[in-house]
Image (cartoon, rainbow, N blue to C red; front, side, top):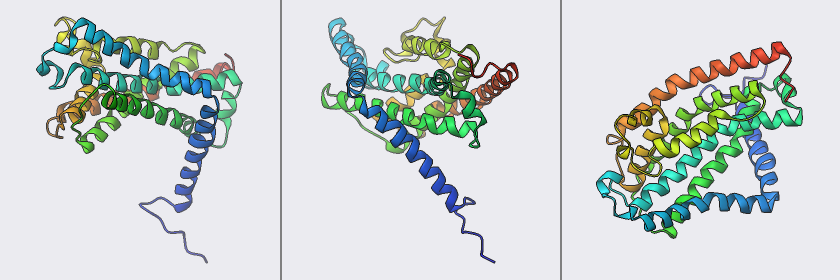
Length: 286
């Protein structure tokens, strides 16, 4: 009798190959090849990434924001402060809307019911379908940072391990809100109130364009109700000042705590909504 195939940490080689193949199919063939074929869309997407950066650069110069005290900006210049803020605010906002967008797209094409009835687990299909969007969001953040450094003179002092950990924890801690947004789109069939609210809310309360300390004390607590506030603290520290793990431990742990609460809540809400739409027979409607 043939011996069982060797395992790597309990995972069969064929399982690894299957994951790699699906990742390639969804990210390159279905994602990149389709997206890059629409050249006008690519150009407009790049413009959409960069216009806010230059807009706020001009406004900061016009309004004299560049003269802000460096201590209130985590030791950075104001340009460096808002470049990092814009890069990762866009990353998180788009990340929260990824799953909802994928579900809405399947609804419009009339294939959502087939997705949830397919042999592949629905969660796997939606996960792989969202991978390209996640990579595109990371690319957008990278492009904004590169323009900030190469064109606007932002100086980076990077602690790479802490930066990578902060990006991962920011993505994970925001995913619970993504599940909640997906549940809303599954139930209401249109709109994305969670994503829209988050986009507007974070512009003012997460320290994207100005320090949280500038907010009135009576509403400053709202800033600490969202993971992006802590994510930006850790990202700015690790990117602009080479901040250590110890220096950013508080912000990183708060993102872990946020994830521990919102991910189970988001998954439970999404599962409940999925069961209800199946029972009501409204999953295929839009």
